[in-house]
Image (cartoon, one colour):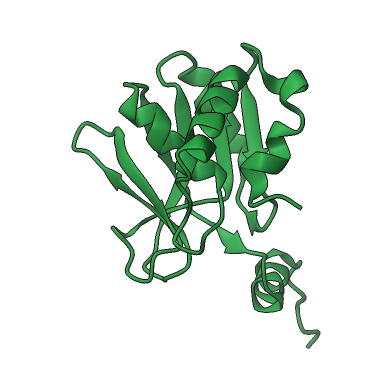
Length: 167
């Protein structure tokens, strides 16, 4: 058992410690990845990391502070009082897999955990930011939380085909 997904992901270090792009999807949220991937492709090389975001203000989620120039200043996870209304989606993009490996290991050495005591991929970005890396956000129109049955039910409702009543 690990103390969070970054430690679990690092078990595959030999496969991701390279210059290839890395996308980490924790699978407990739904968002339209097509536009997200198109944005990455169009802007490749302009940033080192990318976090999809949406506007929210619920405790127990990830949030970020975004500077006026669009760069992310800081990421926080699972705080009782969110640091902003810019919530993180559970998908993390790294331009190079080796950046995730380096900064995840650094984060773990420093014992930088979320407010709930576990390591999370989005917190790796704080290490990158401190090292001068460019981390930006991609605003999403629709994010559905699938971590609980209520979220899955909402997802099913908005994605089911419409049925018309017969007259």
